[in-house]
Length: 121
Image (cartoon, rainbow, N blue to C red; front, side):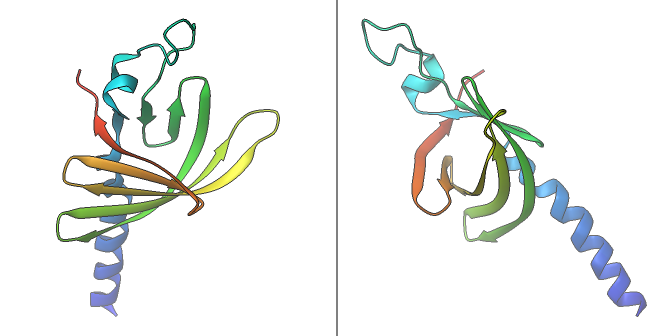
């Protein structure tokens, strides 16, 4: 019983802290630079900003509830439930796949952003 409790404690404390490898600003070169989306437009590309509680891109923000991180070779994967928006909140299941220095974010298994790189600075 004691060994089980120790294993449970070690697993649960490490489990919560591992997703910080995904924190920071991630994007393409255009997103990281904040370049105009259309040369004659006014809207700028924005990187994804990931933290312990939030995922944001430009004006859109999602509240995150993380699950654990799994690792296979040089790839780390995590899942988070996201509630996005204010007036008309939407729920998504996000999968974060980090392979080397490239991140892919998959939304409900039907749309993927990436590969994204960590933005400088």
